[in-house]
Length: 93
View 1 (cartoon, rainbow, N blue to C red):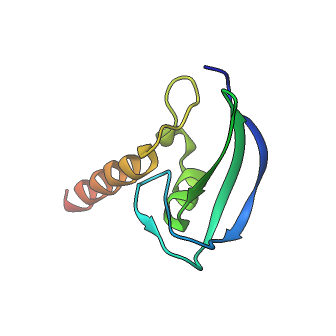
View 2 (cartoon, rainbow, N blue to C red):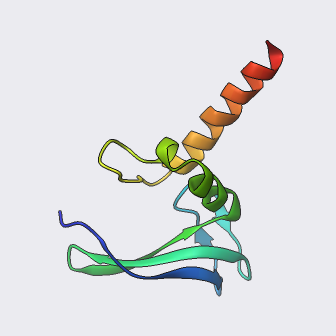
């Protein structure tokens, strides 16, 4: 497996439904999202992030990445849930 190479990234408006790479939630047509187009292992692919996942990844990158600095599909959503649960627990104390 080769490391992906970033071709382009930025804000786009979706022209069809997508799934957020970070949390798996549906992104409907016409939504402003962050996209990354990459190449690796002989293919070109585009990943889409919803606003919540993009903001969380920007604010807390260490919570989203594994020890190799890789962000796996669905990991940002998991990290957001864990963070929110931790914060809720702290408020109760």
